[in-house]
Length: 58
Image (cartoon, rainbow, N blue to C red; front, side, top):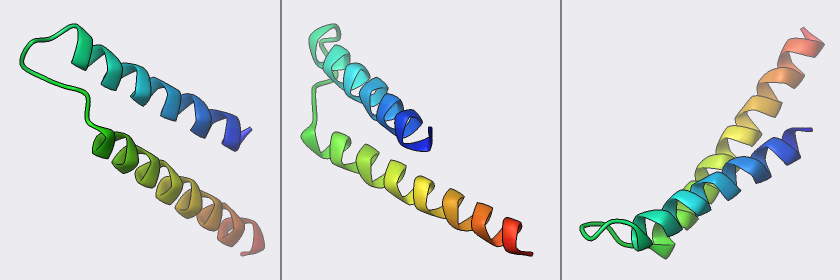
């Protein structure tokens, strides 16, 4: 379930990135933003799972 949520969040970020490149004239698509989104999602996923494991075992 967490993986599905992470994938949906990444998809949402990708859609926003594409739209800002195609709809606005003052913003553009940046591949680096997608990489930053992915890194943030992975970090959040890892920290959240670590927190849940600590909470379950304590």
